[in-house]
Length: 54
Image 1: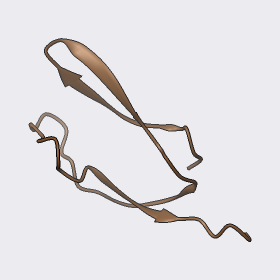
Image 2 (image 1 turned 90 degrees about the horizontal axis):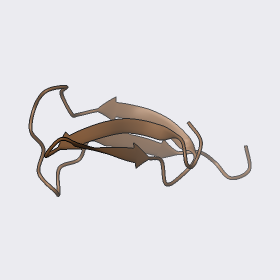
Image 3 (image 1 turned 120 degrees about the horizontal axis):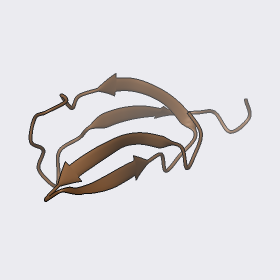
Image 4 (image 1 turned 120 degrees about the vertical axis):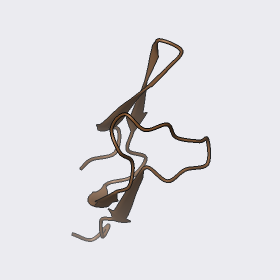
């Protein structure tokens, strides 16, 4: 995925918040489960940063 790409949409209080990638890389793991509540410090998606030389 590329920096700025949408990764997920969270819903809170009938508002939608888009989560975007802060770096170029590859998604290693999605730890969030659709429909479950998340806390402010929960890890939702683990990303392996892409080599800058690649």
